[in-house]
Structures are given as structure tokens and as C-alpha cells.
Image (tube, rainbow, N blue to C red; front, side, top):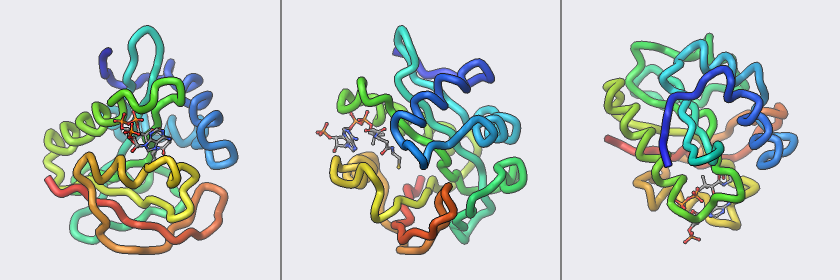
Length: 169
Ligand SMILES: CC(C)(COP(=O)(O)OP(=O)(O)OC[C@H]1O[C@@H](n2cnc3c(N)ncnc32)[C@H](O)[C@@H]1OP(=O)(O)O)[C@@H](O)C(=O)NCCC(=O)NCCS
């Protein structure tokens, strides 16, 4: 199993897994493309014979833990930021519960350290489709905690209550 940087050629497979996992909440090609353009070292893929999962992130200015609303990463990514914000993070359903997500979480830690970020964060909807399967536990197991509760605009434009999850490095 290896983790490598994501490339343009990975986009169709990422979109396929996004659609399968998230349905109408899937992140589609334009957003992944803007992630790659804005912060190419923030997109990673984990694979063996095929892609098993991926994560994508950007940098945000320090201190405030902003929740960028439905956004264009090319506009929000701050190369001098000191917080790493996770935009996408999914393991294909055929490969879950084998420790692969935890490996990808370590990858995020390494990106954050290399980029001199002091924390990693993202919003986790209280009505997250995978809450029952233990998504919050997954993040807690990997060193994240609830920073605050907030509102956040999801991809469909709906405003949702969320936990802002943070891992301090
Ligand atoms: C959450 C997720 C990234 C975890 O990846 P993973 O490779 O299954 O994680 P690990 O094997 O390292 O850890 C497994 C633990 O994660 C938790 N978990 C959370 N959501 C899960 C899911 N949909 N399926 C299986 N386990 C899940 C369980 O507590 C599980 O523990 P268990 O194996 O003892 O039951 C992955 O399950 C996934 O992509 N789920 C759907 C999309 C999602 O929720 N993404 C996170 C965005 S915030």
C-alpha cells in the first residue's frame, strides 16, 4: 500500500468514489481541480492495485478556524496560513475498517508539519451521513477533538449545525 500525491489523472476515480459515498453531497471535478491548482501537495491518494481513498486540504489563516462556505479553493487557500483545513477525506467502502483512513490521517499530520501549520481542522455535520458508523469516533481515535459547535454551509447550500473538529500539532 502506498500514499502518493494526487494528479489530474486521478480526478475521474475520485469523483466516482465521491458520488458513490456522498450522493448529492459529492465534491465534483471543478472543486478537485481547484484544490490541485491551489495546493497540489495537499491532494493525496492511497492505493494498492487501485485507489482506496484520498484526502485534499488547503491552508487557512491562523487563529480563527474559519469555516469557508461553499468555496473556490483557489480563492480561499492561503499559502502563508498556519492552519490546515481538510476539504475531502474518503475511503472507498470496499476498504474501510482496515486502518487505511488512519494512515491517511497520518499523511495529513505530515503535510501540516511540513507546511508549518499548528493545527488541522474541518467541520463535521451533526447529521453527517456516516455518524452512525462512527465517523466522529474515527477522528477522535486519530487525535481530533471538538473545538466548538458552529453552522456551516454544505455543498447543496443548506446550512447545517456542525462540530468543528481540530487536531493541534
Ligand atoms: C471515516 C473513514 C474515513 C474511516 O476510514 P477507515 O479506513 O474505515 O478507518 P480505520 O480503519 O482507520 O478506522 C475504522 C474506524 O472508523 C470508524 N468509522 C467511521 N465511519 C466508518 C464507516 N463508514 N465505515 C467503517 N468504519 C467507520 C469506526 O469507528 C471504525 O472502527 P472499527 O473498524 O473498529 O469499527 C471511512 O470509513 C470513510 O471514508 N467513511 C465514509 C466517508 C466519511 O465519513 N469520510 C470522513 C469525512 S469527515
